[in-house]
Amino acid sequence: MNRFRANLLSILLLLAGRTAYCLPPLQLFVELTATGGVLRPSPGVYSGPVVIDRQMTVEGGGRVTIDGGGQDTVLQIKADGSVIRGLRIINSGDSHDRLDSGILLEADKVLIEENIVEQVLFGINLRKANDNLIRGNKIRSRGESVSLRGEGLRLWYSSGNLLERNELVDVRDILFVNSPDNRFSSNRVSHSRMGMELVFSPGNEIVGNQFSWNTTGIVGVYSDDLLIRGNHFTHLREIAGAALAIKESSQVVAEDNEILHCAIGVMVNSPVHPENILHLKRNHIAYNDVAIYFYGEKGGHRIHENRFHNNLLTVAVSAPSSALANDWRGNYWDDYQGFDLDGDGIGDTPHNVYLYSDRLWMDRPMTRFFRSSPALELIDFVERLTAFSEPDLILSDPVPKM
Image 1 (cartoon, one colour):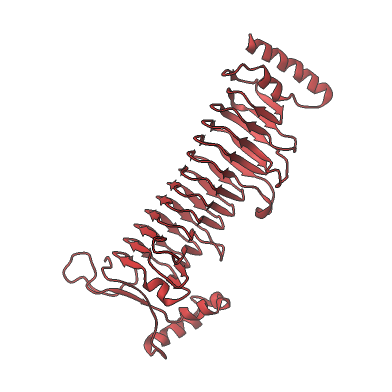
Image 2: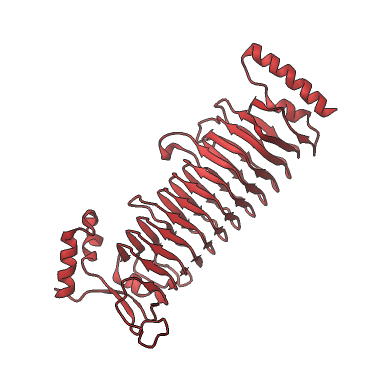
């Protein structure tokens, strides 16, 4: 009976809409749907905004569009246990103060999957929303300037959420603020500013994602116990960007990642406290301008079993001691010049890295333009041939892999 009334109302609204040149409001169909029921609107375009404050399922089948008309948030979900599937959500407002979004989620245990969210300011915004599943959505912001877009995914005081297999293109960032213990898995983020930023958000797992053609990959700030595993970072070429940037965060584990063709592979500040260390293990870091950049006067990070291949510069430091004090062990270095006479796969002598002409562009950033130029290559050659002063040792790996 409810389905019959909904279809009848749909026909009446469509006829009225043709006369008044407006779209039928989906909110009326929501009000006619019983708590716990399923709403399957007829294919077409409906107007927003829409507020769901009772548990229900909305099935669009890929043929239903909700048009916000450029005002406010298009779809707001306040009911626990709701399901939003197969909708196209477009045309939110443009207010950064109101965080105008395609979807605003303020409920728990909600499933949002296989939706297209585009031509909106913010994509999917979770606010005090826990234990939700956000899966298989395609999200795109609007605006030519990346700084004027909104976050594609935004989590604020939200935990226990699983965000998987989403595709985000042309958004500003993905932002976690005070949002611990979420899992971000198998997503694709491209042509945006920050692939992902975590602020005061400990315990998050970032596994198996692809970050490409962004300014930066993942930035962790005051976010402890992060697990960053099996991600692919490619073509992050902005001069100030890095595939992975960690600041003031304790016990961050980055392992089995692939970091290729970036301006900086890994950028990390030296830990203020002994427990604030980065575990960098089994990563493939290749074809970057700088593989790892350390800034600060202390060390203490553990860099084990990584592969460094064809980087213009393997390690850059703000002070020689900041890299020397790290724990380097069992890494593969493509410029290692030792031998393996006993055939155990380990170099017979340590791999030592000294500062030569690299010191020039680190002290004078403007000279970075000339990196790998014949002039700096000549200076580097002369420094190695007959150093004018004792070069600084910045790292030593006692057991380099062959």
